[in-house]
Length: 328
Image (cartoon, rainbow, N blue to C red; front, side):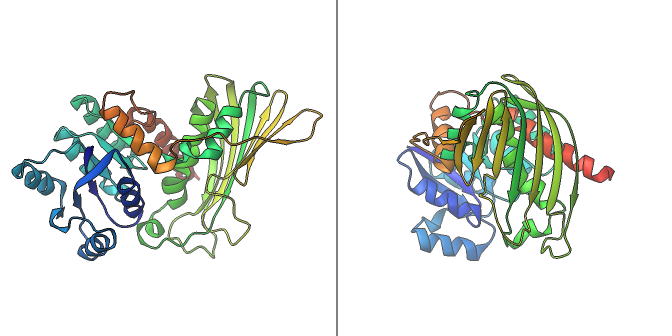
């Protein structure tokens, strides 16, 4: 069993609590949580070891070392502005990291994390769980059936009321949500960004302080398909007719169209009716997949696809978008 310290027990931290507690490969040796009420609630709810909840990672590591307890990795499930400090603390302590996305709250902080991962030789992996859902895996397995992909249209509309830090961010949609879709673009097309143009705005009815809507045009270079042009329109303050969290995707292909709509993949060859694609079977999905991949890497398996050295390329799309918005 792999022994983990989790930083952050509330919000997405609860999702990870459920994931680790359901795993046959990992267990907790300690937690870090600055909110005492959250810690008490989660300890009681999930019957956790309340004697091993600390306020900082260094404090937790000192206490565990004094008890002779082994730590194999650190989960960082905190707001983005804390990711750099906590990631560097873990890496400098010689511990691999699995961090919630985004990698960091600034591109400079992200580069510092990558530099530290390179310097220490320790794994830093980012939790891009949208790659590992059944609809997205089915879509990826289907791309290429109709020849080259020339263009992609992505639409995403949701209206979640999170409260907390997301509703105070300058660009909550792009930084905290669209990072998933940009990462999916790179993953599905095996592509990297060449250029982008776009706008962001905040409707007068929005409950977010920062811009919660955006539209972008992106040019990507795919190692499989060559140049691909993508349009992306999204809102986090939509008042209805919502899409799934994956969004709805349309791929214009050489010999037809491939759609992911309402989490179902359909292929329509030129001159034929659309046909539904059977979902691919998955042994693990979402956070469970990421945890399994992280543990396999700790045991000497292949480096995870979302290690920070690659994931920073997805984050660069976010900050290029923010730079574009600021220019307007």
